[in-house]
Image (cartoon, rainbow, N blue to C red; front, side, top):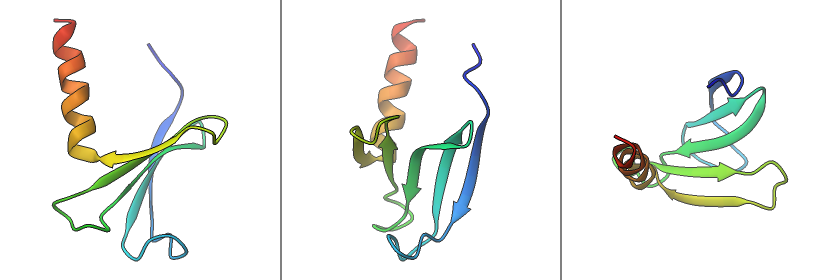
Length: 75
């Protein structure tokens, strides 16, 4: 299933973060931002909803583990 064009964009986002960040865009709209503010071994991801009312932040490793668990549930 195709959801549109996904792309990643590197940015320094100096107004919000001191270190390099990576943004994930879907059809040009930001859906996630990954930062290394807590160190390169503790990456965080911030997820954005379509209406800006939904916005949440978690460890990237926690999201990856949850996605792997979800995929395993369908195998």
